[in-house]
Length: 240
Image (cartoon, rainbow, N blue to C red):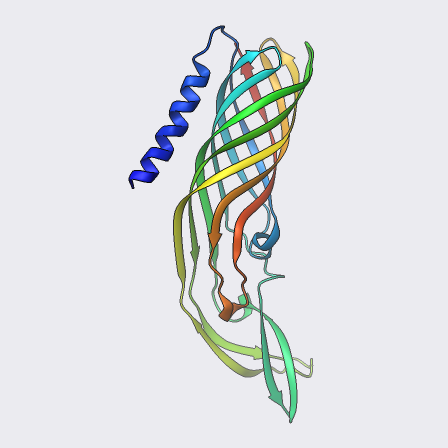
């Protein structure tokens, strides 16, 4: 708990000290995020949505610091990848079947996280009406992963004639994990001036949460070492 408190306080204090500079070029904004899981994470979940709110300060004509609060939740399963290989001897022939987990019984998983991060925004093109920037940041995420238990008989149709037979029975207990993990991200951003101090803001970035999701070998689910994703974000920004 002490380590967790120190991490959060460190990030908040760093963001606050960065934003307490000279000048009055401040930024506030919010965005909706569409998130694509990568690597082993994509074998468990499909794309999902999230959100961010942020505030920041321009330090120079081409450099700003941004402090962000981020939220996301994966809960739509990639059922095409979530299968269990099961071998059985039928009519004296050894056969191997890829059985979708959803056909064995009620099964669910979700990964939910929120966190704070500090991001450096370095302008590449900076004009009165358009701004393009390189982004790089780090922070800390609180996350939870929940996998339900799975129990049921495994039915297959070896002759593809609609007649199913039971070849196995699964009874796999559920699993729950939670942790605080470091996070790093990098990407590109484009902002277009709409009117007055309002800007349309779009960016794409690679994000890595330095956590680990345990494998479930009895369900043919591999270990997720490093939770990777691509994020596409769009929202409004107000500068004052």
